[in-house]
Image (cartoon, rainbow, N blue to C red; front, side, top):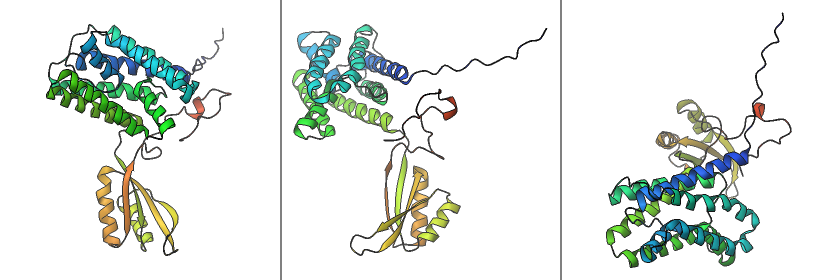
Length: 309
């Protein structure tokens, strides 16, 4: 009796929208839990609609989850006309899920009664949660929608709009709580939330990009390739004043390698021009890999995933 060879089951691809939705839901759960077990027990107004709901809860005794639903829905209705239906659809999942997480975990016991620890850990938890939502191309509406609206209508940069709105929340907290320690803890929390969310969105790697202009660029290039070693990209530049053609060396390095690079350039040409700046999300050989489906695993009939914007 012959046996047919065992054939592996074909891998069923998980759709990108489903993965994004799962990430948004988890991020909202993490943010809502952090609010209830770290921020709310210590009366730390973390900025945004979440912090504003805590202030209204203190004054009027209304459950923060209901306030968050109401505020976010109202803002989204106002912003929908100017930001478009696509933004509204991207925000719906987060708008519903974050207050739901706050409501479902409202009776969970507090993790700490220490103001500093609560602001640090709570800010990190909310920041990671919001970062996951943003990485999934989602939103929770709120102040991010207002900041975008201000940018569209008034030309105010989004970052400044968020700072202004969070500043108003901190000012409101100062008027309501009248406690300097609570205000300082809230300010620390706002900073931690923003830094953590941006770090998760842009990448936490501390890479640097250096641009080097020198008359001795061939020697610098050779020593970088052999002594550090790092990859080098040669760009063609032209002096704005002199009009001279110059070769520009572009080097991407991790933080520990930057000092070696500076010393090397100084040894070869003390008169070289060199600028070093932060490089977020360095993708490719020697650094982080692209977060896309490998070509061999991509189901037939689907177009290749888009590259960096």
